[in-house]
Length: 215
Image 1 (cartoon, rainbow, N blue to C red):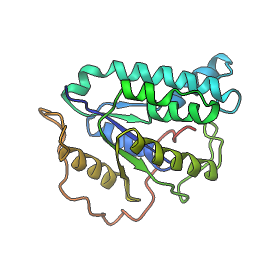
Image 2: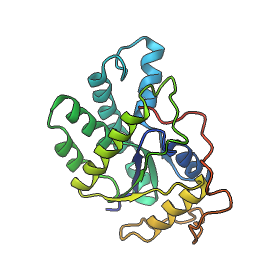
Image 3: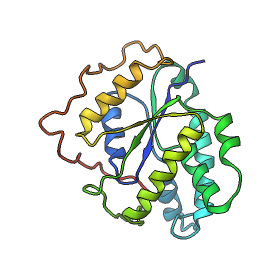
């Protein structure tokens, strides 16, 4: 069975949201990061499962949502690429690091993504603190370092995303996946540029989407 669920993870504030928006604009299904949806829901109803109020409750909700997301795209992921802004590994590893509960390996062994994933590195020039991302750059870097250890330990091949303009990053993601051994056969998929060399704008930080990555 093919698995077209592709995770884009890494440092908070590293340009993931803009990359996912670019991939969506090219016609690919995108799954929004669970944390952003949870923060919106909890804030709307006055709940406490927020990372700055009850982090453990927030992470448990993120795990539940990631499991639902994983199941919801099963059919689409057999036919083509589905891109995830973070996912189960991120939430489970954070909860295990926080509480010591051994949730990571059992959950992430049973619910796999495509074996090749993409990691956004720390990018201080574009990192900002926002209402739904209150932690600072040092905490974002620590999270990135934990994920750099976690994904390979679970058997994933980690491809770092270069600090290029967003379209060039999207080209690199798609061309890397096109050459992977388990690439889904997609009829009518959007074209992928063969070159991943920077354009004239590649040295500039990517523009930010309407919402940046949550914690």
